Image (tube, rainbow, N blue to C red; front, top):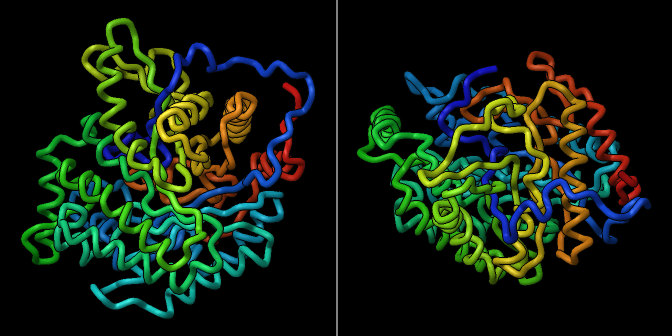
Amino acid sequence: MKRRTFIASTAAGLSALALPNTLFAGKKPTTSQPFQFPKGFLWGAATAAHQVEGNNLNSDYWLLEQLPNSPFVEPSLDTCDHYHRYAEDIKLLAQTGLNCYRFSVEWARIEPEKGYFSRATLDHYRHVLLSCLEQGIKPVVTYQHFTCPIWFSAQGGWENPESIDLFARYCEKVTQHLGDLISLACTINELNFTAQLDAKNFVPIERRRAVMAAAAKSIGVKHFSAAPLGDPTAITNNILKAHHKGRNAIKSVRPQLPTGMTLTMVDFQAVPGGEQKLKQLRYEIEDKFLEAARDDDFIGVQAYTRELINENGFMPVKEGAEITQMGYEFWPNAIEPAIRRAAAVTGIPIYVTENGVGTADDKKRIEYIEGALRGIQRCLEDGLDVRSYIHWTLLDNFEWTNGYEPTFGLIAVDRKSFKRSVKPSANYLGEIARSNSLPAD
């Protein structure tokens, strides 16, 4: 296993807790009967364009991957070639029994140069959406999932106040071309990610500046900023405004299209003496963003693990704890407190838009999924409005700075032939989806 690198995976979210987690985490359902999920509950899997499509040449992350001393352990290259094989992948998703596919459209492909929107690329994504609908799959579309066009980052990225209007314009163009086929729209994936990374000090400020300076030099500009490595305060302020303006742009074209943000969350747990620090970190990383989501149609919750907090902040993973391929604790209970916190702060419907585990042992993936679903069951039994379980991820893919070693997928992908192999965990989750019920524990 590679040592975890300094940019946290999109699959490694942070979440919070509305009530003491000892009241909920691991509590057994009281019924001995199968639990029936609400009618219309979405069962799905997720991907991100840069992680699966391949050859995203005009994106800022592609540029970062090519730098000398790159923070990425390896480049993305072809990834899973999902750009050409999307129909096969969507068909496999449908055959397992899932009814929802969350994917992102790639801004760097759609607007490769400032002000130029590629009709061919927009048509491509329209074909992806039509492929979903042909298979009976509801498409959940993320408009921006970490990566941005090189030109955008070369003019300051999310640090640039112009980013707010640029993102809104992009949202309007995408919705005009695709909005009639989309079931739910997510503006920006994990827009609290930069705040999370900064709070945990994953990347010392000197290292961030060095990477951004190297990127700027490589393309001959004075300033380059790719989240989450830029100035965290400027990025957070502008990205929240961009979400709201982007949401309004989507609504101006398709008023009835449910639109929201997704947040990365964890199960925060304070050790004695860490209560006040936990409260501070929770606000900086989560609550500030949850409060900003109150006027949205829904909140997308993404959680993977827990974090122990003492008076100084984040603690190392507990000695003897089971560790995933990402270097954090195997903790299926994470999604329940995340949902409860999101519900308590926002008061709006909740979609679980990511949850999963990086492991080479598919039996552990099944164990993780079951643990997460038991937590969702408890939330539903308590009357919380939870409307989906979307697993991260559909395919073993390019896991950002960690490269191809971590495997989160329900479907394995051969790195040379691109052959897809459905794992037992996909069939396990698919059977639950088909029945829309969870067997008695």
